[in-house]
Length: 295
Image 1 (spheres, rainbow, N blue to C red):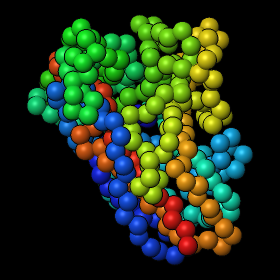
Image 2: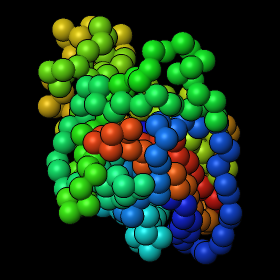
Image 3: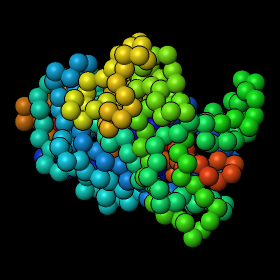
């Protein structure tokens, strides 16, 4: 997922309990439109989360679930219960990885806009706005983009409060065309690699070159090379997982018998955006940090 929402810290014991407070280092922050809010709930299903080497031949999963763990990251208790019974796997790990569902559930309202109870796919050019900021500056104006501009998003908003409910949003393709398939010449903007707008760090240190891919549950860490021509990429309907991968600023060494703590931190307090007409929603930037501290 490109973004999540709210701040909470969960510390999860590997063997002994300790606590390490680490706030991620912020990079670029994107906000879409002029009407953003903290959602009432945002539910994400995690399948895998952990450390790896670059080619996934060595994994230290702090979470590995075939059925998935649905977490409302707006609820601190939900995050606290996300991971249990972590066992250290000896080795040197250079990357952070995560596999999640590419379907998210969100509920929220702001200034007369409401999410509604619909199940929708990422849709071509439905989020109309005259403002989109990068680090506080309107980058539509800076890049001379004609406004209002239509971003790809989810048609899951309404001004009718009686329709207020939880929206189910699926992202099967990043750059989506009118037919629901990729509108790009290669896989790069269809299934990645793309730079996620979520800022990712480990132990407070920014993950370098973080990317996101849309993959499939049969092989969630296998991705379509970014230079694959559109004619040769799988259909959007085959994408049901999102894979995050990024290089750690410094390697994590886990030794046999290591003790320590896994800490998870989310901050997406302004993460849900409504467009100017309140009929579409999009995610702003957020932060994610996972610390694996060993003794």
